[in-house]
Length: 274
Image 1: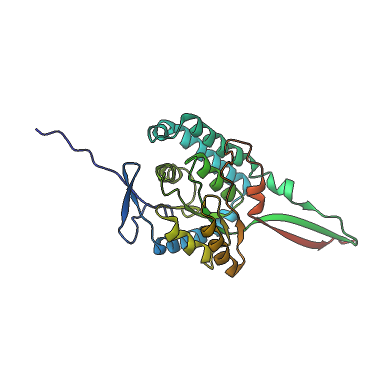
Image 2: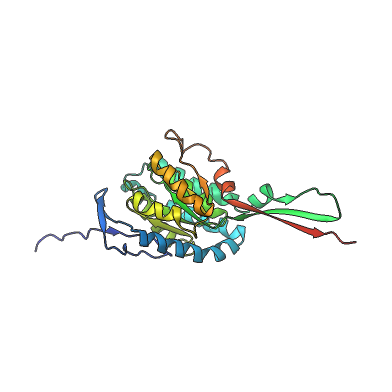
């Protein structure tokens, strides 16, 4: 008998909690694997899935969102060696797991820290509360492939937003494997959607999309492309996070800026009564 030929895995997109192939049928060889090459149509489909998930995810309790992010950390811990086998350094996997836990802890604390009662003149209560922006497009950093990815996804979703992520074109395996972790956790379908392939094909579509509320350009290293994306984003006044500097330390304390930038503040007046 001849030796068995192993089946080469084709890594697919992650849209709406499912793993479809690109509608174009294309793939490309990267990191010794076949990875789907997303098209503009795939980007639009991902936005539809993200929008459909907004109501349920934003309406979930902060405590429940924190539980789900912690569950993602648990699942990632269980698949640690798989990521190491893909070439992700062990200390980076550990840092990514810890980051999920760190953001999970913030879920029910943000409203207390960044909301509250405001002093006003008159017999009224004036209360401010943070709310999610909506659908956020995210360009993941090229490196570190896993920690950088987690560091841009977690702060967006812990605050109740849903995301469409353009993964690193040169190191996509960490992203598509993380998608498998998300799919087997308790995260509702559509909260995180991951596209692989050329940024120049999918990200301009996301930047110009009228149903995307914010765009995070962290992983865009081309200044000309970043400027073009900002112009496209201005069409519907998207909130824009500009690219991270090349020397950004992803292992450092992330702070709260990424979370608060993707929040809106609702203020309510209510009479105190007699």
